Image (cartoon, rainbow, N blue to C red):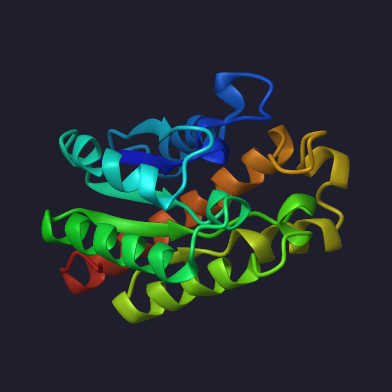
Length: 201
C-alpha cells in the first residue's frame, strides 16, 4: 500500500522533535504493526505554509507518484491567509474529484484545535466545509479538531504536550495520537472494502 500524506506544515511535521516524530512517520509504524502482512509505504508530502491554491498546483506531482491513498490535510492556512471560503471549497472539491478520477482513494483531514485558529474569526467555517465535502462525496474525514479536544478532556495529553510553543503546530505527543487514529481509520476502511469487494471510496 502506497500512501501519500499531502498537506501543509502539520503534515510536514513542524513542531515535531525529529522527522521520525511526524505523523506520517508515525503512521507508517502504526500501520506496519496493524497490518504486518502488508508492505506499507507512507510518503510525507507536506509543505509548510501552503493553502488550497498552493496544493492545487502540487496535485499533478502527487498523482505522478501513483499513490493508493492520499490523506489530504487542508484548511488551516486558508483562514489565516483570508482565502475566500468559496474558493477553498472549489479547490478542495476539484482536487478530490481529480484524485478519485485517477483511481486514488482519499481521506480528508480537517484543521487542528489551536489558539491561532480559535482567535481567527470564521476559521470554523473551513473545518465545517471539509466535513460537508466529505459527506457530499462519501469520503472519510479525520476530525482532528474534535479528536484533539477529546485527548485533552480525557487527560491523554497536556496542552503543552499536544501543541508546540507557537500555539499552532502539534508536538510529538499530538502527532503520535493523530497517527494512531489515522491508522485505525485506514484499517477500518480496508476491512469494509474487503467485506464488500469494493474500493470503499
